[in-house]
Length: 527
Image 1: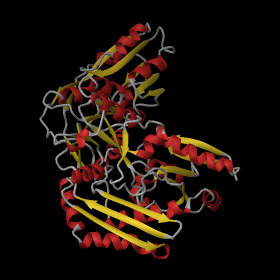
Image 2 (image 1 turned 180 degrees about the vertical axis):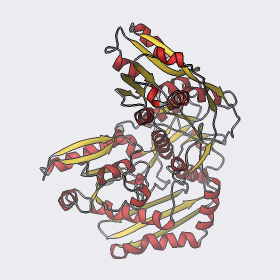
Image 3 (image 1 turned 180 degrees about the horizontal axis):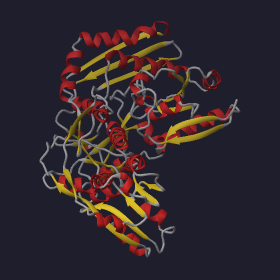
Image 4 (image 1 turned 135 degrees about the vertical axis):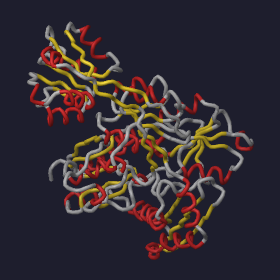
């Protein structure tokens, strides 16, 4: 067998988990290679993702890579994996379950348990609902970010504590001394389990993974995930489940819980069955939850709960469809552009080296002159979408960069002592002019369009905002608060957003689809 290519997300925790799988396979004599992958908007070009059954925000990029046969196995936190896998991909193995508990990281002492104005932080609906069910007089605040960020926010806040997954903190060595396992809180289905997937047709890989499979964990995690599946609960339903196999007696204890999002309603079912009867326990318990009113709880909550995202430009129907059902998408243009009238004399002054940093500039130039007017020697672009438009309308692009800073860094040496024309708008940030001046490059800036702000007040319930230009940020903040997550198409937009927003994240590459992918990935992680 050739080297086994192990696909994984590139987070600290994901890499740790993948390394455990790699170590176990290496011990069996297999050669392996870790392949960290970033989540992107990539798709199988001949079929939409939904036809392939690819749905998971955290897993879809690994699924795509596997279906393209770029990796042999993928390593996941099992609780993040949809209960129905894409066609052609199967569960290959699970490792022995780690600490399945949720834990409370607290400040100083636990006296706040008995107080009436205590504040606990978590963005998990399941944890929030169970906490409020037990402590209805407490308040629960949202806590977003990676593990380190959340620990830092807790330390700097007036919160009494925050809830984390014990396995995640312990695996990367970040569990504080002042922490407590919440043994009364039922975990998410398959919490603490590392899962390996592979192609169904790849029999040698499946045989290799079978050797590191942990049977007891496989049985229990399957029951928990089946319970979730039969209830058809997603991130908007607080569903918890825990199955435990007693090796000595071969009996399984199961507990399943469904709550309303505010914790005021709770349905709990328990079973003890022999291992031989385990195949029906999940369905029987799910049916009991439904019979006890579970469907009414889920329907009520699903009507009320959506992650609300605002796009500061009008997205196409295809782009809106990239969001999963947990999201409510609002689109509103916060800027408009107007093409400037250019003279024929100006055309004669344009240099042979030109720069475009936006599709708007390309379109504005072509509204003034037909494409055959120009014979540029070298065209330099910022962003993949701008490059695609330029190559369709004007000709081959010499260099593409994700930001103006990187473009200047890339081309400054080759353009030293030469003249460059930059087609831009009136509200440009001036980055390129300053950087070229420092590099002794003569820059001609031609304003081909004007940008006008369209400020508007939006509902405060918006959870996140998608920004596609620095001007859109400036327009938005004129009438809206900034206690939201900001997702930006590029670093120039992010630099402006950081003046106003505490949490700013940048897409992997400057295209709309990657902004959407970044927003989904981050927001779903908080649910």
